[in-house]
Length: 89
Image 1 (tube, one colour):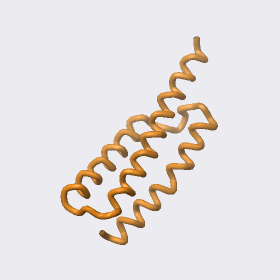
Image 2 (image 1 turned 90 degrees about the vertical axis):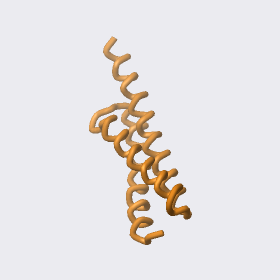
Image 3 (image 1 turned 30 degrees about the vertical axis):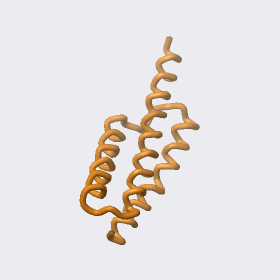
């Protein structure tokens, strides 16, 4: 475990609740990219695989928690996209 890895995950993890709250409140996809969210999920997945195979420690759960938050934001993006499209019809 690296203290710098923990700090990085804490900093990134602190941003996602704000992003999720914005997605819930705005009900809009404006300013967000599904591709970006999927790339971030892939990065967290790679971190999880690395931790599971080479360095099992509690930091693994930080990766999992952060990935779940990004997945939540991606699901909200999909919901908001559907809402935007239904308003057009």
